[in-house]
Length: 232
Image (cartoon, rainbow, N blue to C red; front, side, top):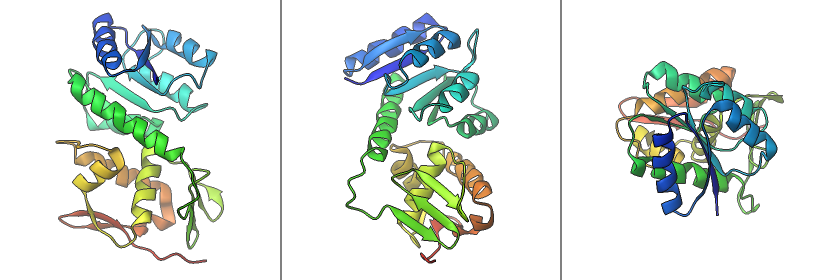
């Protein structure tokens, strides 16, 4: 049974999420503020399959809590917020948030997003060795078992979603994907009305790839593709 940590200072929100999680077979632990959640996480960092965090909380806000968690763990994090500005989403993604849901939200949508981030997390941890798991495109290298990207042997810091987006595109060199296709393949479900999420992540990914940012090519009127051949 997968264990989910809910962190929100509104008891009615925690109750709503708990009811739906338990109805889907999840084990649930609640925390009413960031400090309580951090204490729970530190007791057993590997206890939780995912965390659902509110942004605005007493003691320690969701951003600060996520930053502290990311120092020690890649556990999937879904952030809840009453604000939907693009800046807030960009900030969250830079911290390593896996997904972002604006209040008020549909419990059905939350369940879909939770299942998607859990599925991606499980896939990342399944290394069977049956597929090619290391690539080099000139000075850019991708090491799947280590979840590591380097440029000229220097590590590149990517958020989990930036990494997944890069890997997916690199796995299909020369193939153009629409934003909707990328949302379905990388995010794992239909992200209706959020096409700009892809553009935001592509922008951040290109900035981190620096001299190799042009490997990710914009296909005008359609989406993006990875244009490169493997080499020394």
